Length: 545
Image (cartoon, rainbow, N blue to C red):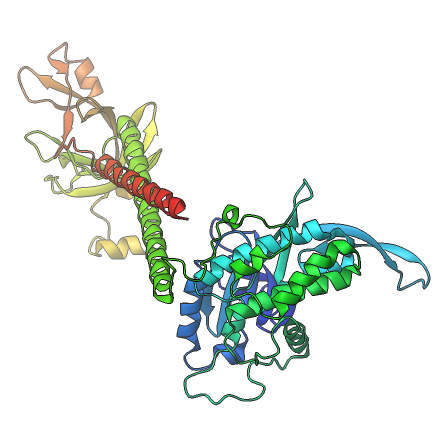
């Protein structure tokens, strides 16, 4: 028994439910994916079986076949997998119907108290509300089970372990009954023997007392000619249905004439008189036309009688179609995801580039080495520029410098600093030694701030002003000279000789191609093509069904 919280595949255990002849049962919750947090039912194959040589491949092969089973009367396998020694199978959880029932009090003998019970299976119903089953409800129950077994047998799958505990129920608001057989194929799986393994008398018989009890309960609904290690046959399922009807009538303590026909049918089913599920259903009381349930009986001598090879070919075609549908769904979902992400990136980049310069893109001044680059950000980011000659001790300038940008009064404020040459007694020390001792202050740096505006239509940065500890510089030019920066006081006192001008830093390598938009539209188009093809195949598959 595994403790609460233990992980089994993509689920975590909530509580232990019990141990049966085919493995341990757990109430779990989905721990990942779209259904995260939802309740699920998980079956864990016994460890002594899962560790048999060759069982791993056999388990995957059988589960792939069982995964294709679906339809009325079948509680489908949702997922399966292997985690270390844990071979697990996942089913949807059944909430069931909660009822209140008076039971004898354990604390006060002779008194009755109300207690809640949950009805999920036929066994629960017959234990707590056997009066709910009348001949009409029994017909609804057996009709659902026959439909499920018919579809399973056509696919070559036999249940082999039909019993009241493996029949799930649901009562509709109208009072009608739906039923599903669960754990298809697990009895056959539990009888696995490796090639060359010697068969023993107790082969397949559980050792655990709870599992032993479950095994003995199931044996009441299996032909006595079947040993525990035998591969179940289709007729054993019909036998099980007959025994279940006998059991329901006995639990219901029904002796009236309305049950006579059902007793007769159950005797025939228990005697293995019906060659197929179709023949069994045709003989049930209240069944007139099998065609309304999609079941056709092949009469002896009819032309076009299906043989085993035809069934095998049909099954392979169904599996191939299911695989094709799965592949198309995956491709549709992936192309839709990539297309959606690309489209959103294109939309985001369009909005960003409307408000901000292109990140990590050089904006340079024509004819000179001066240039700027801004890193991505919403209100701040890294910035790169060129050291002006005024802030170079050697008077050359032109070195790259790293700073940061922020938004201030509608402008991009680029802040830079450059270490000054040390002229005191420690001047012979290397720069990294001086800075590394944490002795620097703002006085040890040239610090300046460049304010730029962004002209979206021209893809240009305009240098508005430069501010350092001494002056405010603004762009201007004398006569027909090239624009450059002048102290604001000099421009104001020049009596018009220095006119204000623009210093445009234009983007280099401008590209109008929106590759993210191109990829987004392309992948979304591919997704729509996959979706259309998927719809066509699903429609064709539904028509064939």
